[in-house]
Image (cartoon, rainbow, N blue to C red; front, side, top):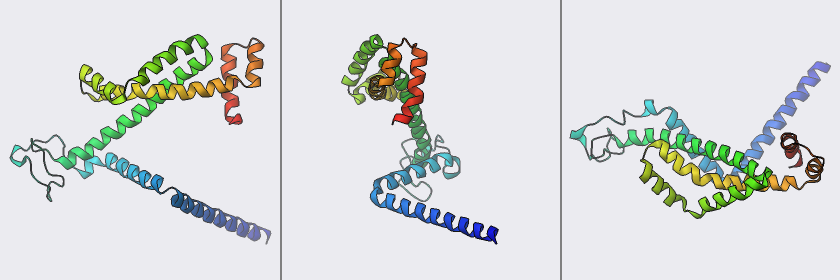
Length: 213
């Protein structure tokens, strides 16, 4: 009897949790429709990128006799001046776009995190790094990207570099500001005053930061 009651209570609790989750999601969707729409578009793009070989033909196949064709059942987006399927090129281009965006996000976050930590820990490095970051931020991102691609060529690697470099200063400034705010906490000042080495000092900050925020 007790086992049956326990199972019934557990089932009712699971049902309540499921209802709360659904209610919470509906409330979130109602308050943030833009997030839902943009997330749906992103998921659709990921789906297209993953299943590109099953959704489109070879994007590099040349058909000069079919060049500049309007949209039709055979060519949904038409063809370009070389007879290539514009829909296939768009689908496969989604792969490149998502890959570039992911690599840029990881690279800018990684380099920005390391540089920002060094700038926040070491005052001498801070002065030099922040002057360099200010100089990079003074250059418009589009102008920097155009100049770099024009100088080094239009390959995917160069595009990644051209987009990553202007994004690093933003991450550096954010990480540096967080590190400087943590450095002013009493336990950090006490560690510095007691002669704690940089390694132990950084470990102390790393472990305590999530608990303080």
